[in-house]
Length: 562
Image 1: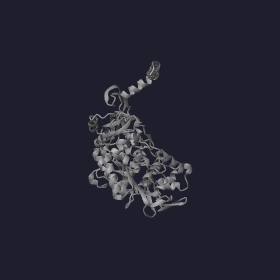
Image 2 (image 1 turned 180 degrees about the vertical axis):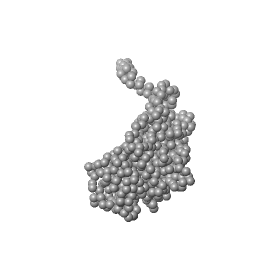
Image 3 (image 1 turned 180 degrees about the horizontal axis):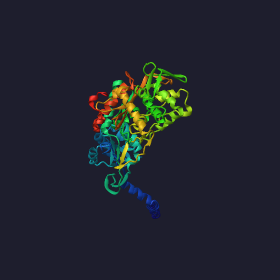
Image 4 (image 1 turned 45 degrees about the vertical axis):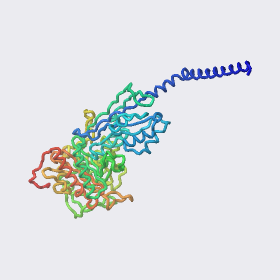
């Protein structure tokens, strides 16, 4: 090999080294100068992680500060698949710790296209701590709240449910979301190259949600639910609802529905069982609606309690023949007896004296055909036929509670107006927020005190010797009204097999403390409000009077209401 050839090779080799050095320098310049900020930020991200810290959800209490919905402290486990170096071992450890299927845990841990995956949501903090001590790379932990309902099935349809992310999905949990939710915080954590937390460098504290106190009494609620469950079982009914309300304030002490469900099993419960029927469902009230017709007649001065009429056993109204629910001949009845014996013909006679226009106005005045404004989502407004759509027979059907659709809460409110001296109050479920009284709308007077006293006296006679004797409570005076209404079949005709039985009562009748409404949907065997709903009212009322320590207002020796 010549000297010249050797020199050429050295020059070529040196040139190659210079080219390689130039490329390296150019690459370094590109990385450090041109893209330096971006890579610096990437390095920080690899060693720092910001985790959202969920806020504690406010607690829901009953009127006596008994918790109905609370937050239970749990731990959520997550991972960064790009930092997980032992996915198989980690999968087995997670599956064993939380009793999970490895086939469900493994795929997310090896998905390196993602920087964050949940491993296990809201698990036992003790088990999570044991897993953390194993020191797996790429694994993270943070505290999270699990919404639980310590009373189980009590008021489940009213409370609703907060889901896995602690957001209200139904019921009061949904309508009070802004109050209960709070504001989440943040936490920035420094990690080692393997993704293990080393230190917390900054914290933005979360703001917990506000607590809410309801008007519900969990014992009154639980008792009402127990009574309804037994009634549904006894009569093979489709469903039943009950409302216990303070007639003076509109505070709802119980709003029960059967069949019920355990609120902690909300996701696996059928939608029809989750529905709060007392607010969302409508029905034809039948004879309980006669309260509106008779009250209107008294207030308008077209009748007095002593006014009497000769009443035939049937009445032709336009093209419709209307009969009594029980066979009788032509009789003279006073207004008091019309109410006591729940006479259809007598009630229609009063309505005809009022006239269509005034009756329609009174239906509106009592709040039917529009929502009550109760603080619960999804309230139905019911249905009241507008006056311009009335037919010739409407004056014969609506006064006795047919051809109109109401909700249980609307009917309870109407009777509350008679119980409290004539004021239509707004029913409500929320009493306080964070200890501060929740402002309620004032009621409006719809009938005079005199008319309310007259109606109360007539409703007492219903229980003493009328259709509601099964509602009588020893030691207490009771006022109320029975209702039995056929349901409409798919062909648009009234059914001969499906009925709604109801009773609305006021206790003690001398100075009412409670309005109690019971509605039983499609009972079998017996269908009448006086035999199906009135005994349920009696059971609910007796418990409530004892629980609230309401003194008896009638001597036991009378026996007239025993």
